[in-house]
Length: 470
Image (tube, rainbow, N blue to C red; front, side, top):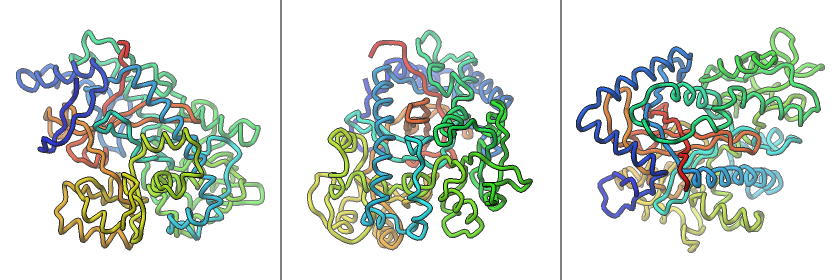
């Protein structure tokens, strides 16, 4: 069975359903929207209240967690685990390629003056210690990774908290269905994330982690910092939230304003703010000298989180740097991506093209994205954009760090949209959290907008795994 996609085009194929249990939930929710939705909204209100009481929020606002889960099959779960864990190994290879290849470095012009801070790779592997890989299912059923999120991704703690709260609410949508949400490490173990920080520190230094700072800058992207600080203290680590401008490099090591030495820093900030800020020099110098363990290191913050990394991976010019298994992963699970620049390259079918002309002529199959923006900022979907606006944006993109990417039309599901109090079709994606090279759990987001983000009126769906075979 399959969930038909919206968009008003009969030519668009359907995305395979993630499980038979999810098909049943879809049917129940659609029937409730038609006949009697009151029991479902009562359960949703109970969930919303329970989440608020647990102290879960999105940057001080109510956390938009939905009663409807996304239930995936066990076979799909295993496939996603293999894909995501292989992707993190691939990013290790991409990081080393960047460090030794000036041509690749040229694809990231915003960071050229920061090279000495970027190429100091840590001892521990994987280099990407914490990440969230965001993906969509294409019409052929393949999972496509469209964002790498290797900086300081959201949801590393609250995803598990939400799933735990959700699992204790009586839910008419899932009654009688067999599935498992607690199997995921970030749901099962509330300290899963901070244990990974501790392990990374031990692998890097041979010592136990005693002090840690959550590094913020200018008060942006503070969501979950309170939970990170709390969880670190729960396991006996002295932890504090600091602005990067407060951190000082001393002869004894990196220090907080009170003189307390810092063993590890977890970056939770907008990486663009740091690019040209002299206020951060002490911290960056200490990272380059490896005087502190930083998670994730700056090659992750600036390079591997930049969408141009997908252009490196999908460009035939660099294919010789990856082995055959990595090339299969790229071909099947990473959409064609290019940095927007005038010149000759290859298209999705590996035919030689002039890129700017190709973007102009194929807008219905492409999306333009700033290479280092987040939360869906300034993303332009070709098929939803007029030709005039598209042409104007191409000219702008060619003068900025922008990428053009094969557009993966997202699948649809029926869900409860909290702010509008409506039950409607929404597009959705599936994200994989990877801690220390191992998948720690899943998250799903849904939205009316083709650009899905909780910061843009999106909602969060807990992910469960069906107990049925297949």
